Image (cartoon, rainbow, N blue to C red; front, side):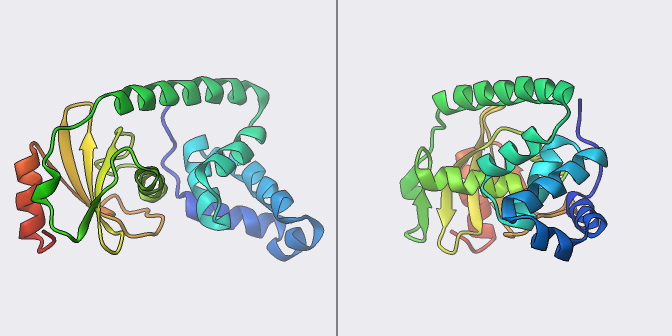
Length: 202
């Protein structure tokens, strides 16, 4: 079941208006407000993935916390389907982690930090998932963060499904236009280095 092409940020805003943002925040604690918004998103037919992204953006939640809130507000039949999907995703992630890309870290300048297999790589991956809109070239594509440039926006990714690479400029915003965050996909590590130098980001 693919995600509906809805604007999660707009839906989250509409949900908050429908339940009355000021009233909700007065009546509930922060967790109660988040649950109320999650219920409205689910009732509006927003897919679990897009609902999670909307919750992360609105309440500045971590991925695991947003997932838990959305999941507990799904109807029981959709909870079972979502659990199966989470299991498939976790298996895919584990398989992806077991294979590693071949690259030369020394090709990168001192402005870059290798984050493959490090906690910072997980943080950057969560940020990419938060930003990607439906229709983006990387939406739904398993990706491993390999390196991050000083400042945290320029990133290099390995795509284990086909062994190719992507150079992504993160925006640190939830995007709705599939052109953003900007991404260039290339076939080899030398092409990654060439692309970085073409962008003046070597």
